Amino acid sequence: EDQVTQSPEALRLQEGESSSLNCSYTVSGLRGLFWYRQDPGKGPEFLFTLYSAGEEKEKERLKATLTKKESFLHITAPKPEDSATYLCAVQAGGSYIPTFGRGTSLIVHP
Amino acid sequence: SQTIHQWPATLVQPVGSPLSLECTVEGTSNPNLYWYRQAAGRGLQLLFYSVGIGQISSEVPQNLSASRPQDRQFILSSKKLLLSDSGFYLCAYRVMNTEAFFGQGTRLTVV
Image (cartoon, rainbow over all chains, first blue to last red; front, side, top):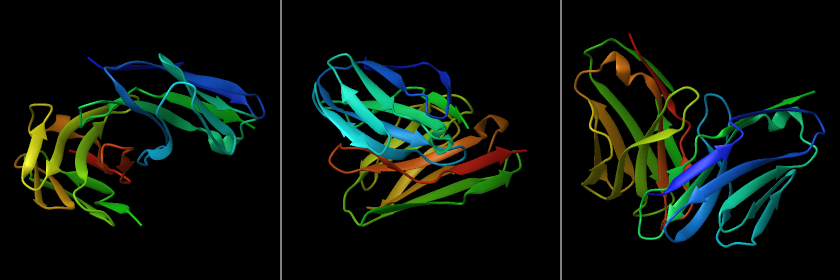
């Protein structure tokens, strides 16, 4: 059974304090790992797809990396507007259903 | 460009009343379509998915049903709502099993 575990569940940072969110996964034949941002009362917004170990992608203050067992979402010098819940999901080969983690709730204080 | 529309944004319904939530996708053909429910502080629970017109797979036995009358239309229904049906409902689509794109969600409150 595919599993995704995100940690920590919640993270509070001061503005400018860099940190990382973790997504550990077990999947039969990884076809893709996805990161999303979700604001309260909104649908998740797609951020990145990573396909293979060693791959990295960046967008503004966010950088996602992938190994064979986990992915990290690095947040550099975060701003209050980066406050949101960040979701990770994996896609196994031969499945129509992505497996989502429960998310990390990030709050960035000014 | 591809877009997804989900409505209504909020809904308050009495117990025992029917439900119909609609989701449409534009700009692509034959997407995989999904209905999720998200409880406060918890992850996404997959309710139904569809890989084609009239093809519906249910992941959780419950008071809800889904239909896909057209290629890019996905409907979530209930004949009689329960209090436990309250939650945040999300529709999503995927093309070729790549990343999913979500609608803005429907906040359903059953009273």
